[in-house]
Amino acid sequence: MSNKNQDPRKANPDFPIYNGKNACKIYKDLSDKVIVITGSSNGVGKSTARLLAFMGPTIIFACRDEAKTLPVIQEIQQETKNKKLEFIRLDLSDLQSVRDFAKEFNSRHKKLDILINNAGINMPDRRKTKDGFELVFGTNHLGHFYLTELLIDALKRAAPSRILNVSSGLHESAKMKWDDLMFEKNFSMLDSYKQSKLANVMFTKELQRRVAKDNIKVVCLCPGLIGTDLNRDLKTSKWYHRLMVWALKPFQKSLLEGGQNSLYCALEDAEKLDDGGYYRDCKRAKENPLSKDEANCKRLWDISEKLISEKIKN
Image (cartoon, rainbow, N blue to C red):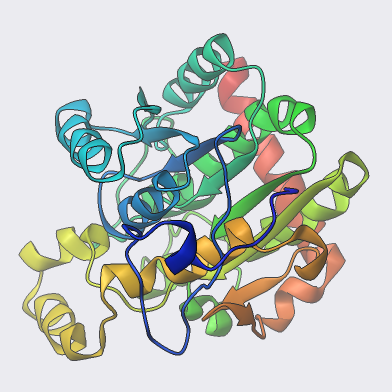
């Protein structure tokens, strides 16, 4: 991205300014860029889309629910005056939906400048995707893995381009259950989520090694603890799940603050971002040591490819 950095206040007086210490202080003309953001109808995804929309790009809202997403698009269009906002349905828990999304995107656009794999879920009990994967791992990791694979040619055509994978600070204490990735033996709400977020980081590392030659920058990030729809299913679950959601409220960031790190990773000059780096609060952060092991990352990649290819063949 060659646009010169500007002071947001001088570039656009209507731009929502966050004055906290971890603010992203970059504003660029993105009028020639195409951006896909998964899970952009609410939470961090919506905040990220809103902030980027002020800079003029084409943004594709990749979400499951059209009735829920279209009012969000209209709201952001009215505020930002950006009419280049589109909806394409995407259900990351359904490989056919991922294929349909990629086909529709490629029919509309010749290139993709930024892919933000933002969507994420957490579940109080073990559930399955349409293809039979454990729902959290299947959605948070495998769905984005497959989506990225199907959009990689569009990213190559836009090079220099970039991919942002939204992880979580919880990945730092996670482990990969290599003998039970789908939690068929003993499901744990926290462990399944943490593993999926570690998978996001490991995917980032291996993907960067594979696409560096194509001038694609890949990073992952933690938006922080934010009051979003991520834990919506926990609110109607067991009492201790509801208690956990309530207890975390005082420590949550606002959506404007939560969008700062995604904004930073989308806008910072590529040469200033570490290849495969993990970012928190608009700066490089330490990730789980397991993600630094190339053999681990390649193992996850190979397993992911195998799991998806088996379902596609069927």
